Length: 418
Image 1: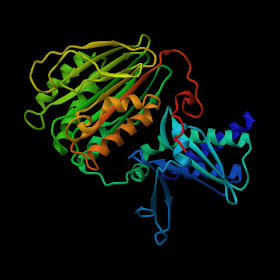
Image 2: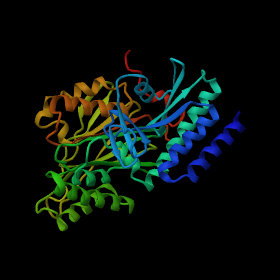
Image 3: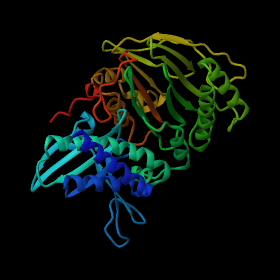
Image 4: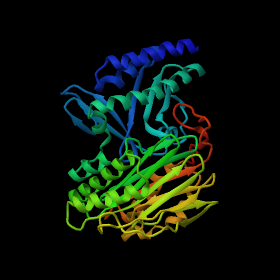
């Protein structure tokens, strides 16, 4: 069976590499469909809203289109409704369903906990356990096919956008990391940004070194393109100094000077929380530059973390910065937010109470649940960006992960109630 799997995987990867980037996914699904004698196989990509899947298809110019169309490309949005597709992604388990005239298999397409989409197969007969395992492995391989090929085409990004982007939103999108979720042996991190109608300059970022996790949440003053450009300057400086090996204090000082020297708007500034987590010890160093305090959820209790006060980045020349430390314990959840989660109409949300209710959810679902909660009290259009980054600490940095097709099953969220 394993040797046969190697042959199937080799065929899938060869099909993906031989096809143009826009056809790579279709080439993989066609190869899988032939192997399993499937009637149809399709890939549904996760929508950027986090609340739907999108079916991409190529249709003749005079053929029927989905919800949106660009030339021969069609995108059909399938909102989450608590059904099998959402359950598959939430629990990270394959769903095998009896349907009239056959069987449907829904397999999550995931990489390190990041939901990329869903593989949907229509089979004439109930698949054997080995066939289900083959589908699961192919879905995982498909994640890497999407990651590799989206670098070369706008098709996937176009399909994921259910609403048009403004220029400021486009700039902001480019500042965010390529994946919003990362599972490792010692931690799970997930972040989310719910944009305002006029982009408010929020960003989040993270980078994993060999024994250190770097992360940040920033909020640039103002709205629109000017705010997005200020955010670009701040994030660019932080990344540049971080990649040069600078510590948090040096990163903050360099960004402070850069924002003052190259200010897009005179007097513009950026608030920020910068973090550095030692993965061997669980000691987290934090620098708060005029930002909303981070929160720690420990033993079901949520509280603000007291940290040394610093001025925002870009406010005063020559500002000095001070850090604080937190020793994380297994089971701790660290949450970093922007003021859009607490100010204006969003203040109507009891954030600490909601955080306590979400402790059982994977950070991937928890951050989106919090974003939904903010929209309920302050939406449907937000006055300011609402951004949050959530980090669960487990310890065991040098232990191997226990995964199945790109996800740690023990950390996955429970199914939605029926």
